[in-house]
Image (tube, rainbow, N blue to C red; front, side, top):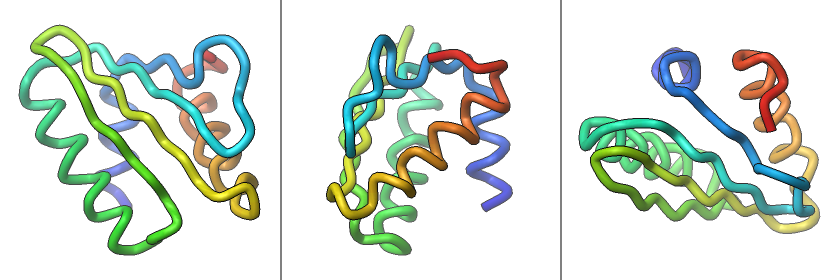
Length: 93
């Protein structure tokens, strides 16, 4: 949990640019290769804890994108995750 919080704080993040789509969002991180590996590791561990999450990590040396999805019945969990990221980064969407 602390590692995830540190990752969110350290990244320059744009969460769900535009409009939040119910039960899905995209987080765009300015990054390098190390961020891609960390994002993959954290999303794998998050999935093992909360199997309802769907993650797709892609990126280059300049940017990493994490697509996050949940079943509609878990949209409140995704909204809480987005709210947490926004609070760390001043409401960026």
